[in-house]
Length: 245
Image (cartoon, rainbow, N blue to C red; front, side):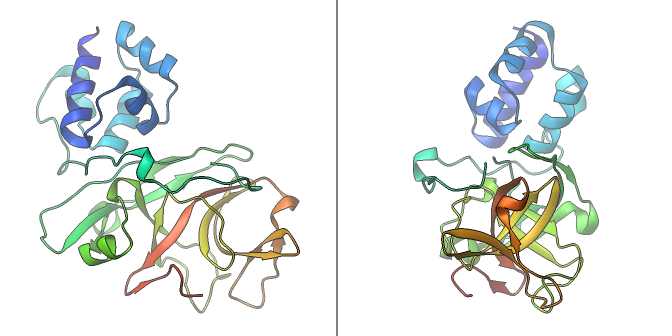
């Protein structure tokens, strides 16, 4: 096995509790064949960047062995897939990522990211949003109250005015990427034709619509474009959002 991959396995287990090739491939949003190729040839430059973003390990350490291993405190261990809500048939598509735990006893830092989406693609990539040090400090009580797994949470910024007055442009919300089950009246981060949207989902007469809080923006039938759910919006600083609308 290539030395870089030995380091990747070491970092994945130490920082995220990931032990198998399949777990690492899933965390990095790569195919197992790609990871298998890395074992023989070394990790690609793009793979090094993905590993740093998803796991919090240093790309330089992976490539050369120059310490330190981690660029930030380690990730929370990933929960068993069996503990996650089951998917159901729906017109939306699917995917997920990683998170760091910090030193403050009553909060857990959640990675602030920008979503990189493509029309018709169910998965997604992220790039760091370094405002406020690249993290949102989520109260530990919120995690516990909703039985959330920090590894699956992302903090993203709201864009546009369609969710005013509930959410304004550049407000930050926390998205649970493990929860893609559409529930009417809940709020979700979505990939709609390659654009990242925050919308309330409404089901009417067996059809799903993207609903805006701002009356100046009309509803959008999800079948009018290519739509996939990135995750449910579970928290806006100061309030839990699930089950409240």
